[in-house]
Length: 241
Image 1 (cartoon, rainbow, N blue to C red):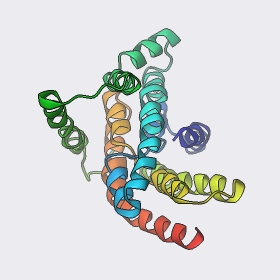
Image 2: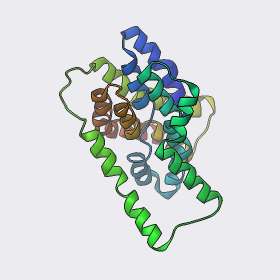
Image 3: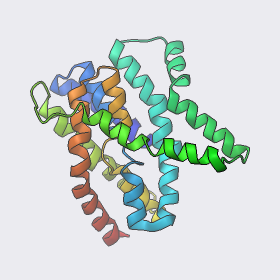
Image 4: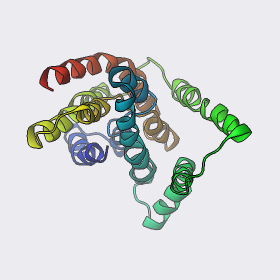
């Protein structure tokens, strides 16, 4: 996740400059093409393909990876690209007061202290947690329209190409060709890199006014399209590894 967002910060602004995109379009694609849907889509796909072992690796990709990236670098991107420039202390404040980041720190504290919820508290938390995915999908879905008026199709194609093809190809090259690594953990890492754009990244882009229609289409088109591209990456990995 950290490698991919780093690559996005290097590549997408260059493409945007070449194609004449405004800052809002670049910021939108950084938040959507640069961040993967490693949990909502990633967890069930990885568990189905690689079982419980794969799911354990997927959790490591998502929590200290995608989730922390969106809570830190994602907030910085959203803040800076929506306002043009913003003071460092203001960005730090936004990160530290971002509710998902606070929840992540609290969960990390509970794990370090070996504290677990049980009984009625666990039931309440499970019921609340079960609402996250439908609420996130509804938030994006309400912004989704197949009316492409006002949306740059070049930006949409470029963003999806980066997320579904370039990002996994980059991780594939680094882990397999350069490092010579293999095993389930490598397969999971590459498959997670190939996931569709992150819903939370899209919500951030919409919230900060960074091309809401484009952000919604990146998820709305990217998620169903990713099932086709994921199948291709899975076949390739089974052949290579």
